Length: 88
Image (cartoon, rainbow, N blue to C red; front, side, top):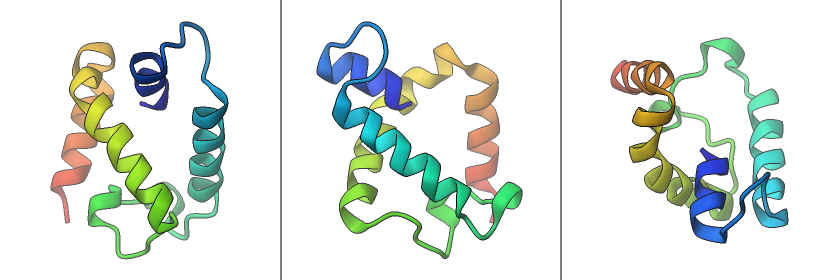
């Protein structure tokens, strides 16, 4: 999702800009440290906030922008995410 966002918002063709690379590294590190590991719920349904407030807002912007495009680029992942998001 960060790649889609970066390409559209920062006009990158290959790879991520430095700001988006930093965000991706931050997100991957937070996921790695998640106490739920493989059973991690969708962030919207999670009771533990892994991201700092600033990064959380940035991730929301990325997800808002890229979410619509994910259906076309990765339909199975999109469906899996929607199902996960819907479960409590």
